[in-house]
Image (cartoon, rainbow, N blue to C red; front, side, top):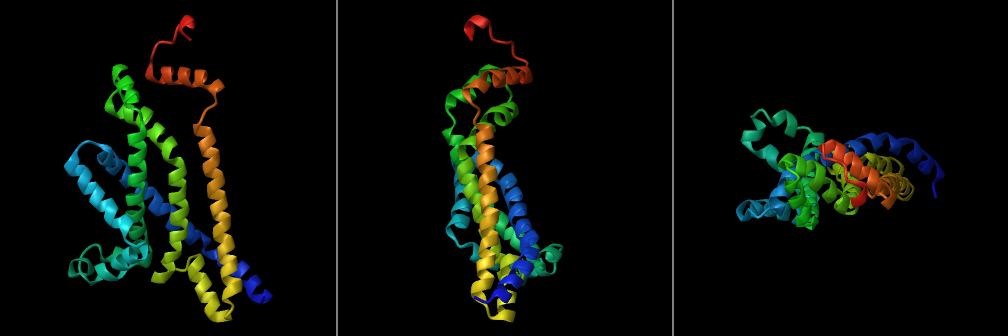
Length: 249
């Protein structure tokens, strides 16, 4: 093992971690916001709209992310409408091309994940909310979304980890995140083993932190039986419902 190359990689590669996190977090946030209305449509009984959303998710989940990135970065730049339009300052930058491609891909996966969570909610939960006089927005934000998110959290954690690893594809469009810096360092040192071992350790460390945070969030979203009474009282206060009588508790 080349210890000098290993040490150099330990110093150089963490500099690309910020860009790696940006390529992970930005598409996840944008993709999540896009996927919320799409998941509601996908889980609804509107067949035509649900079929249109399914077509979008099927295409982006069924094709490699690298191909999608190349289409956005190399393909769209060839269109006169893009090259000579207002969007050219965006599509000429590899960072924004990567964010757009990653966002569309993440939104497709997250749509199917959330749609599965919405379908898993018992119909009685929604009917009870309607019986209490809750509006559609209140039912969504207080009942449906919290329950669905709790159900799909393990699957969405896998999506977050997958997007972290997918961020390495940014190196194929000249972005110098962790993998991009690794390729540069390998070209300079001819020590691929040492350099990519360090890169793998960086990705592994970030994955470990994401998993730990997800487990902590999952425990927080799954209250113990002793906390149910206080949670019910807080919900009643929020919804301005009368407290339960002692005999009915």
